[in-house]
Length: 275
Image (cartoon, rainbow, N blue to C red; front, side, top):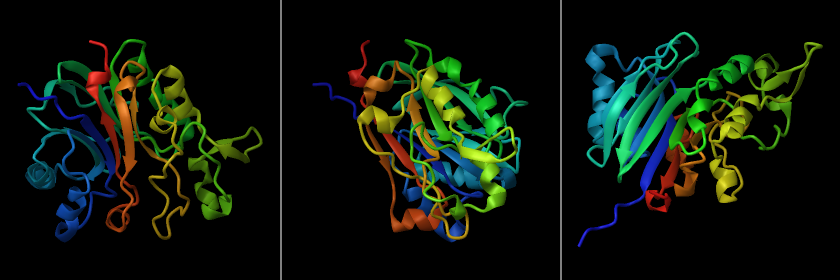
């Protein structure tokens, strides 16, 4: 008698500046084991030394690696796919190499008889205007009826997340990363244009879709913008959103020691989709 496949587990993880030192690297990877699809941001210099660290991560996780070089600081993107459960149909490592601060990849996969377009990105961390412009390469994949999944470090809060409790928690010279620039040259509230453009295009915010409060994924690293907020997302398109059954942020002492971001994991039950 045929067995019903388990739900698809999809994660995003900004591992911070290339990841933990070698002695702790495998413990860091253990936080995101047993996933079917994983997007890693800041895989810094993983293409060096004959891709030693990339190959090690793929071996530890037992997944197929797809590297997308970043245009900035060697902070590459790595998409890991668990084959043969998930089949890779095609992969485009840089969909707009001249227009992203880091990069964005597009991968067509097939899982449980469903074809899904997986977009993986790390949006501009320092420029709200550039961040908004980058979303223009991603919104088209949220069109009605299309099954797409956007994974990545989006460097923005959620569309309706609370404002910072106090802007004093963020050094004044870094406010330009997060706040709206006013005509006067002063700053207003949080700049949410990028995430709101994605949601308006048809992507679903997991917290809102599941009726849950937003869970922070960044902002607790000592001495660095100590303001807990969302920054990391897995966003299904409208055509894929019915499959979303759970969203979990791995917030443990081990996770907080490993990076300035926490891993986020979405669970997708593809049997909820209409064939």
